[in-house]
Amino acid sequence: QVRLVESGGGLVQAGGSLRLSCAASGSIFSFSVMGWYRQAPGKQRELVATITSGGDTNYGDSVKGRFTISRGNAKNTVYLQMNSLKPEDTAVYYCNIIGSTIWGQGTQVTVSS
Image 1: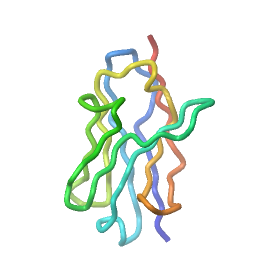
Image 2: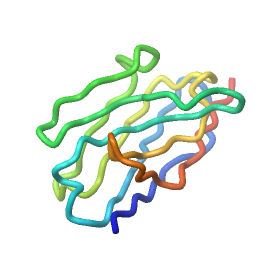
Image 3: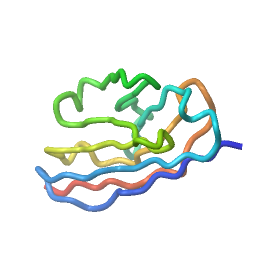
């Protein structure tokens, strides 16, 4: 059974940076499209970024130019580098295998103004 575990969240001031990690167990990971979503209180879950097994990436409009999604060399980890953070980036961030119901437990990111 595939499991996803996120880490790297925390409290940061506006303009700062954080790097989130998603570690996966299971053999399908390297063949899957992976994504990061986020959900702020009272809002719907929002797609932040995706990356294919070949490294093609896609970003939500609100994070383009500030966030970068990447895969680790071992192919079982996905990262989200978040720069120039804004208070509106505050949310719980989740890792997902796109098209599946496999989610991590989420990691809280809080950006103070």
